[in-house]
Length: 119
Length: 119
DNA sequence: CGGTATCCGAGATGATACTG
DNA sequence: CAGTATCATCTCGGATACCG
Image (tube, rainbow over all chains, first blue to last red; front, side, top):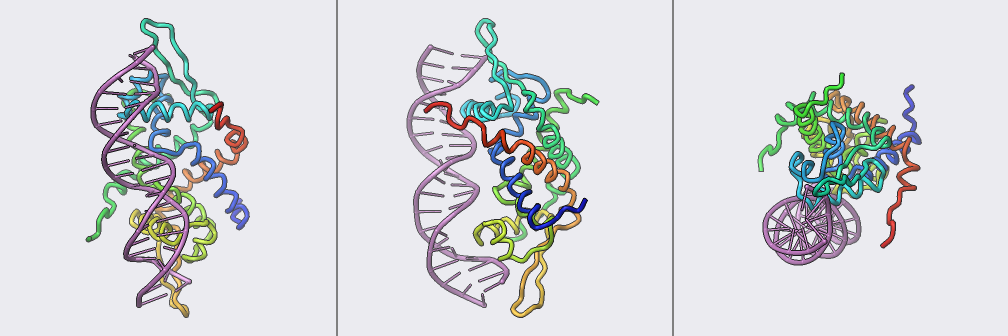
């Protein structure tokens, strides 16, 4: 299973670049993992994550373009808008899980990391 | 196993933020997945990935600070420097694998994605 | 070869105010 | 509530040249 030829290495890079292109930005992964919890409304999401409306709007649009989340206008009074993970969005579960697990296991090392050795 | 409380959701966000902090930038994941293949020398890595010396140097330093890769000076003539994954770096295998797999499976959807609906 | 120094533009992000 | 508009800022990353 050690498929580590130079060629497969190049393919892996391309695959990762593609993934990064879809998940780029500081917020997309945080939005996705939050919506994994349950659907959220716009402002609710903004408060939960701590993101400004401008950025949230932009990120949500990009995620929707990539069909990872859905946007639904609810006929409440006043209207509210609900964002939720799509089936295609759930294909990222493995990615999100891996990132979350790594962060949980290695948080201490990150915090302990020698930020500034000596200027 | 559906551990999806509001609290666990917040913890997941923190974990992901920590991970993103370590892997931030456009190149770190590409460097890591390349070094997963085998150790590389500086210029060799630069050529393989297509990154300028300035960025490569910066990214390698940050990765080394986080103990994900090692830097070894080889006493050749002239000297060469070898970069390799560390044991701690291999703990990212799951993350790298997940990102690679997703990219391979969903490349078509990324390319097909409606970039500009209508300007 | 293995870097570092400098310059610079583009894009990402934040703060704030405003609209329907 | 759900966004958008505007402005200021700041970081990222590329190009280029240079050093030991």
